[in-house]
Amino acid sequence: MKALIAVLALGTAAFAQTPAPAPSLMNPASLRERAPEKFKAKFTTTKGDFVIEVTRAWAPRGADRFYNLVKSGFFTDASFFRYHPGFIVQFGMPADPKVGRAWNNATILDDPLKHSNTAGTVVFANGGANTRTTQLFINLADNGRGLDPPAQVGFSPFGEVVQGMDVVQKLYSGYGEIPSQGGSGPDPNRIGAEGKAYLDKNFPKLDSIKTATIVP
Image 1 (cartoon, helix red, strand yellow):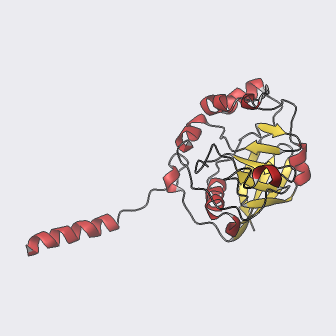
Image 2 (cartoon, rainbow, N blue to C red; image 1 turned 135 degrees about the vertical axis):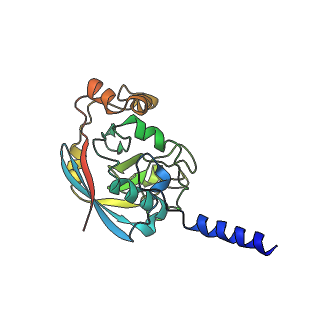
Image 3 (cartoon, rainbow, N blue to C red; image 1 turned 90 degrees about the vertical axis):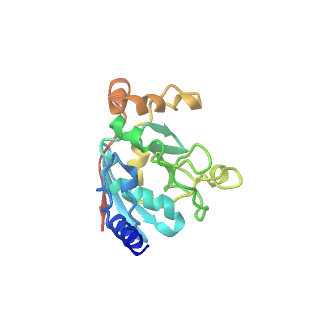
């Protein structure tokens, strides 16, 4: 009996020492670092720069996901594929469709709403309860009446644009709404399947993100 116990103890120790997987965009489970309580992310785009300030207490799960996406370079070359004037601008589908497929099922639980969907706030899009992955939008107006509970559930801002909101407002908007909203703009299903190549060919005027970085 003593020998068996010793073997089991050795096995447990070996398991405990297994190194964590190296951070990789192709492995969402490897990108789970806790975000600072406050931080800023600078987005350099084809239209100019804007800065998002994140307050983790507003929506901790959303803040953590955003922090890891920025740090890993997820947003490089990603396009602002949906622009509804006076409502939102949406982004967060990667340029490389292989990366997008890796994140399709990497959902996070909803955060309770602690800050209204006011103009300039940044929010994860969703397809229902607890379905947030990587797509985000910036509110272009005060959308609390339409997006805060009880009208909607799950749209919990985690930060806000504190510099460059004029840049956000100037992002290209001429292609119209996405097909599911009755427009003839970019199709998110094709972005997911084909990546930025689809957008460059069919919607060449769209603005995109050159880099996104955590800044002091």
